[in-house]
View 1: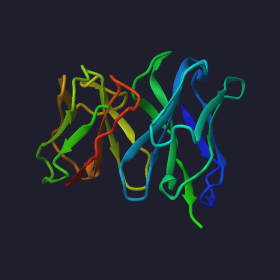
View 2: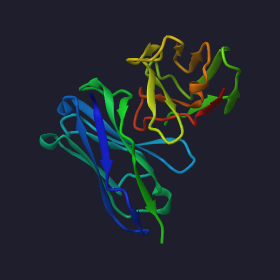
View 3: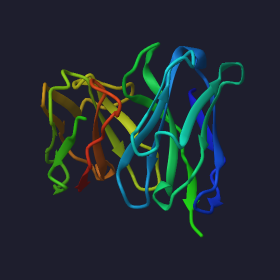
View 4: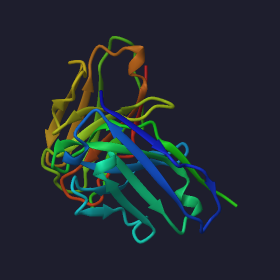
Length: 121
Length: 107
């Protein structure tokens, strides 16, 4: 059974930093692209970032480029999102998700339950 | 950057009837389109990918169609548990993997 469990969401002040983690199980983690998607309170889904199965390629939404950094450790079946220079508009529930395709770039077939990041003074 | 537009914003349908949800892309995304269902307090669930392929475990009541810029999600024989927000997402031309703004379906 595929499981994705996020952690690390907290209340942080504007300009602050934190790192989100996502631990995966139930599939060959090192064969799949992974994504971060966020959802502000009462709003829709916003794709944030992806990292290829080997960690060689990373991509970001313009809204987070230069402030958020995605990474992975395939030896630990873990995905990370380093968040720096946080803004109030980064307040959201952050989901990690698994790509549909082996060594590809598609939609997301499995999602974690999310971890809440609140940026507030 | 591709913009995804969903319509209508809200749709109210009676149990047993069918619902048709639309998604339009600002430029062609071929068949690289997915549909998700999200219920309150839950993570999104993949329904359809490749515009028309049902994900594992998704009932045949859910069907997707379209290609290029116009896509449709049809849900037949609606049940109360189908009440949710439905999102489309393109993965043809990225970044970003753009989502539509969602259609809220009320049964």
